Image (tube, rainbow, N blue to C red; front, side, top):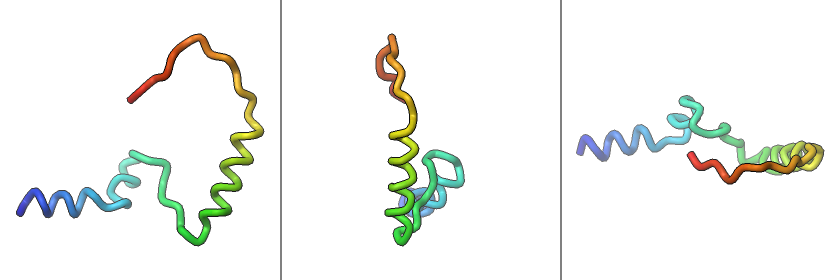
Length: 57
């Protein structure tokens, strides 16, 4: 039972966002706006060649 309670508490979206484990929570009603802004920002950034592999955390 203690494991289940901990899972229920720590499994909530606000728990992880409060600890900056992700980039935040998007309100479902604003998903299109956030996606459009994100894609616009990504397409405006210049992509530079790298000489290293993929970093995994």
